[in-house]
Length: 66
Length: 270
Image (tube, rainbow over the protein chains, first blue to last red):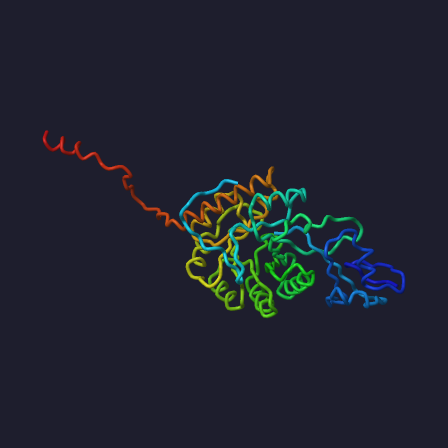
């Protein structure tokens, strides 16, 4: 399946849940916030959220800032 | 840390009902080494620290900034990168979802040369986010009407710029910040942006600012923790001067020693 992950096309195995995508995308323990097609997916709902072809996913985290 | 011994009693800085001993807020951007972030926060005594949100880089490992921020520090997420109120609101909602609190510094900037805040968009974002229960600290161009509108919109503080972000130019907007200090009593006035050296921060505090936020100057110093401590002392110094009611400048001299009257007596007898 092909999705847009953080603005870039990404090919992923099908089926894949949002929780698994976050785990494979993040190599550290910083809290990651996930947005699917413009909507925030809360942490408890990530597991049951299945990705589908054409989904747009944003994964964001904290960085240094003023 | 040097202790200033004084009988002067200062009330704590209160933002949205939360009290802080330190009037120095530190930003965590631009540091070369993350270890300097932790050391600078400790040296600064800051109790409020700003962070930002970015897309994670799925290709490479990035260090988690939160690991370098000591426990008990209030995190203030900056909406930097937002070009308008909708984007600022989106960033704030994402930040809250992290579970790291609901304190947000609104930055709505649509100008890459001067990075000046868009006051109108900032008011709109403040209104929306305050209504959603966020503690909103808007970064703004020091304009009295905007400050009043921000207070009305529910801002927990108002953060006027001293000068352009990252410019180290000091208080170019001093006279207009002073108007906000004189006229806005409902919320703290926190001078943010452009503070390059400790004397700039002291100057802001001497004229009655409630706090200062510094990032670039500390982050880009040869010894960030050293400069963080210098800023901390300057902010305390400026605050103490303000509370002590320092004098105003005047046009003519006023002797600080008594005049030697016997010389005049001598002149008269000769």
